[in-house]
Amino acid sequence: MEKLAAPRGTADLYPPESARWQALESRIHAIARRFGYGEIRTPTFEATELFRRGVGEATDVVEKEMYTFTDRSGRSLTLRPEFTAPVVRALLEHHLLAQGPQRLYYVGPFYRYERPQKGRLREPHQFGVECFGYADPEADVEVMHIAAELLRAYAVEATLELNSIGDAQCRPRYREALLGHFGPHRNALSEDSQRRLDRNPLRLLDSKAPEDQALIETAPHFESMLCDACAEHFARVRTLLDATGLRYRVNPRVVRGFDYYTRTVFEFVSSALGSQNSVCGGGRYDDLVATLGGPATPGVGFGLGIERFLMVVDASGKEPVQRTGGIAAIALGEAARTQVFPLVSTLRRISDGIPVTMEYADAKIGAQFKRAERTGARAALIVGEDEVAEHRIALRDLERRVQTSLQQRESLEATATEVLAWYRDLPESSQPDSRPV
RNA sequence: GUGAUUGUAGCUCAGUUGGUCAGAGCGCUGGACUGUGGAUCCGGAGGUCGCGGGUUCGAGCCCCGUCAAUCACCCCA
Image (cartoon, rainbow, N blue to C red; front, side):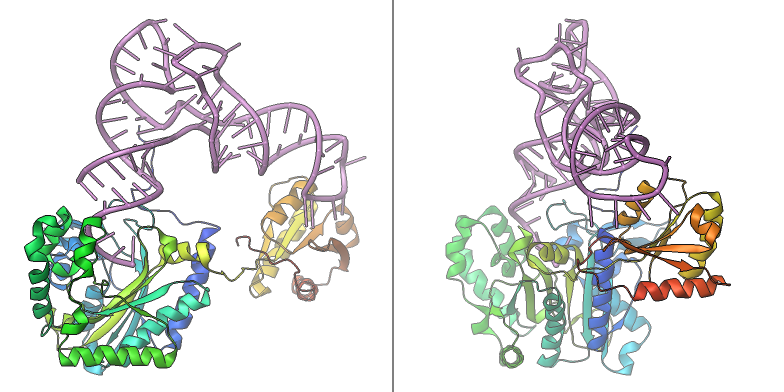
């Protein structure tokens, strides 16, 4: 009998790691809000046709990485392999573009049937933004700023790599130029690159095969062949990046995997990720909305991998420390327990975010202190036989190891209020606590 | 989809040419310390050796298959 296990390439999230995700997600919501972006949630699966048309029939994702299935009525559905096409679909379905520019962001899982390795899963999670309705370079830089803000908040070292892959005007020209450059040397290229030559010559520039490098070095740069409009757009993006102090590096080798990109493409890369070195990738997609049957609407956005981001944080970043703290109630004996439980219940109701825990098993006091410590509690509330007899409650500062005692009041609320007042009066914790909630 | 490495207690790992090989450290738990937690000492629980099959008198060790992890390619978050 096979042991039950999470499917290949998927992962469970649980404490203490889940606390890191919560913290990251709240920061994401805060930053998106600061830039005026609203959250959008779309289904995890869509009609297969959406991705075939949106992402592109000849892309690797559509050709071999989709989780596609047929439901009971015979429809072909696909677990989303990316977010942009579904967001556009939703926008069109609800006529949101008719209301002017739209700034949206999302956080959630997506699915690709790939062989897992470092920084690559079958169900990864992504934070992404999409800005619709502006062809202007300010929008390109705006979305880059959002990603940069998040990286900055965690002191993550990643470099912004920038490129332009032109539009429907100039890309065919560049494609021809690449064919002219590589075509004559076809047999000298790696096997993979010979295939790229037929399918997507742009991607040849991104090859890692040693035998391709010499030819790539001498390949024509797209920048020299951009049409006037694209060249000006690219120049203005760079001017705005310079003006706002966001550092970047123009890298002619940055192409992207999806067919819908036009003009600006960019990636934030980090060496901490091994072979999958991109934490965040994005770009402009001025033709996508029309391709999916909507009014011609420019757009620009990015996707940032949550798992990869946290990996980079582990390697180079600084994570804000999480304080847990709280009160652990310790009751000794039956009488004490029946007295403490309602008090704990009251504390939880009025503690305003301060965690309150209690051990229900009748463990020895030593063990209870140990467990209290493990929960990350800052303080302990202790009631034993003596306290029951005297209507008192012992309060202990677990960090400084000092203890005091309190007379119980006429009501649970009054007692609880006094306990909380005592807790809030405790001196600032000297050692930051990173234990899970 | 291709190639390589790996899979023994909750965690990190030992296990020699197949024959007490089912172990250690940490963790957990109990006690020394009858109501006070990070130290020390002593005890205890916990494993179908990923799973299935094969070779053998005998397999954690060899062979095949399968599942999963890791790393690289492809590609990308």
